[in-house]
Image 1 (cartoon, rainbow, N blue to C red):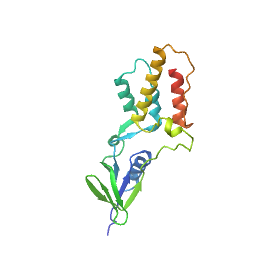
Image 2: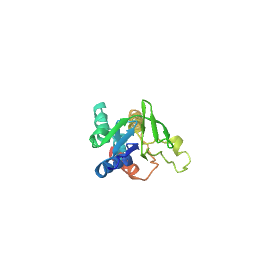
Image 3: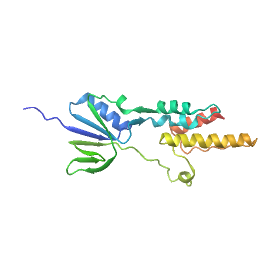
Image 4: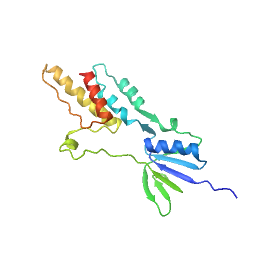
Length: 186
């Protein structure tokens, strides 16, 4: 009598979800299903490159190339023969019946891994959330890029000579790298 294969469902294809899927694919012969609402994995630690890549020769092509450097198709990362990927947003999880429901279907599971990401923490710093730009998505990085480009162009057109202060609310890798990018740009 053989051992019945288990069905493992992983929700979220960020760092934790992908690492779990890849590791399990090497260790078990069970069915592995990875579900994420995006078909790409975003390498968020490098978003500062898009946010801080500002210069007068910036083109849409440059931004597309930068986007491709931080966004990889999930199918290019996972072992397709061992992990099934479903692009969908999860609508409901029923732990009693062990069912995950998404817009166009549902899947049962024996084991469920929740790796749904994180939210920005503003650490109760007054004004930080209201007056800052987050760097969690490509769109966030492009907003910062455009805001800084417009700001510096206006200063240049007005021939304004003044000290520019850019506050970076975060001293982690992204904040430090972004500060370095700003120093290079200025």
